[in-house]
Length: 272
Ligand SMILES: NC(=O)c1ccc[n+]([C@@H]2O[C@H](COP(=O)([O-])OP(=O)(O)OC[C@H]3O[C@@H](n4cnc5c(N)ncnc54)[C@H](OP(=O)(O)O)[C@@H]3O)[C@@H](O)[C@H]2O)c1
Image 1 (tube, helix red, strand yellow):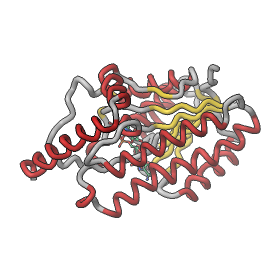
Image 2 (cartoon, helix red, strand yellow):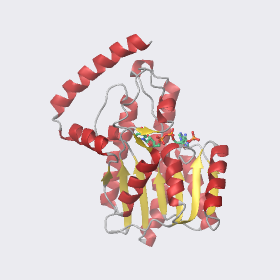
Image 3 (tube, helix red, strand yellow):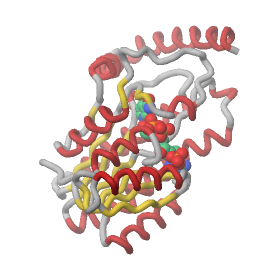
Image 4 (spheres, helix red, strand yellow):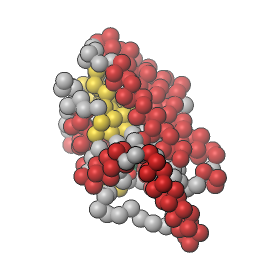
């Protein structure tokens, strides 16, 4: 099945990184592009950029904090009132938190669970009924390689992205044959503001050979959605490493993760 990536398109987390690139690339195909995130000034600047590139495009800026479901539901209902429907949901907004759980800021963990799970789920729940009724629609859920393979020092984030994996696979099966594409994008490291927000305490940078840029990540995600793929992992090195993790027997992976955690704790001692 080929999913129509056109019409009324909503991108969450459009104020930076992968989401801003989704918006730039979808601007050429959408009739209306709805940009969602908290930082309105960033969204306004992106909207101006997109209108300049394609004056016939309608761009709507919708500032919204997606840490709770109710705000996400209100957002979708406002968009539907204004534009009549939503054809494509790019469910991308999210954040991470790096470090051992015992020192994690509990408020930050709550906000992460909010946006990565509650807001994420509410967005999908709000758009799906009309898509089922119209037998048409496309949803791209942005997960992570950590949604497929566990990783120490990332426990709560890993759990939120495993949620996205289970949610996407289940929803995809649920709406199969109803004209709706549901795809998950599981990137490895992408050069965005993600790491600054996640506050990496280890003083180690991501190896360049595995990191890709946000434009490539978005491009591969859009192509995967268009082809109605269940799972897309952008970048050859990330694809290899993530799939290696997926096929490694759990007892071996557990041992590897214990050694990784021990090394990371030592690094934390050196960095701090
Ligand atoms: N970069 C990576 O290495 C990587 C790898 C795997 C998966 N991912 C996933 O990719 C997605 C995009 O992340 P990114 O790398 O592009 O990071 P980013 O540059 O930090 O962008 C995150 C986006 O999410 C928005 N957001 C965060 N909290 C929000 C909230 N409470 N309400 C509404 N919007 C919120 C941010 O906007 P505001 O701050 O303006 O609200 C921003 O637009 C995330 O789901 C992330 O988990 C990233």
